[in-house]
Image 1 (spheres, rainbow, N blue to C red):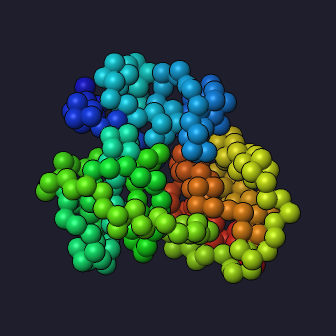
Image 2: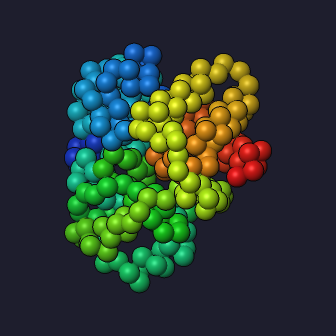
Length: 278
């Protein structure tokens, strides 16, 4: 039994729905039958549908406490090659305030009630009892991970769980902003002010899904495939304010599932914007 599988079973016994992560801290890609949610599961659209696939598909939506699933042959290869164990906080009625640097930790200590904390590579996770909507970049260096998101399991942490405070819920009570990938500036103001002639949910969803598929289907020249895909998406939606955080997260996730590093994704996105003059 691998160490990751052993850890997963231990935390599943505590009521935390678990899933394996690939190296790079990203979920395993969907199997061919579930590719691009063809089975009906659509977690990236916040409306996961039924899926009877035995593999660890659909990212956070695959998280489970069922030991028969966790130890099943369909999950065995994933555990053997996994780089980490993750869990779905919202599925356990928890919220993780992910503090990515010292400044964020200092803000939390001054603003939020004390609760259970877990040391991370660059900062801390503050865990609260209660679930809410997950949102990235609610303030500099702070992400909220709860429903329909996953957090990496590191250790049990120290301190007593406190109830989810209104101060944390209030962090997401704002208008959505254009996604900012690491080290990438926001799109120019004109992007959010323009009227988008394409702005229909169906058109945008189809475009993002096609972009994910284009990246997934690349058999060689992954760097170039990611760059040209980002370029195509930005050329259509980069000037009109269509792109929200979830859309760009899906593109970055698809690229990392093909082996791209976060740095390469960031470089490709920046280069695509520069080419288009954004």
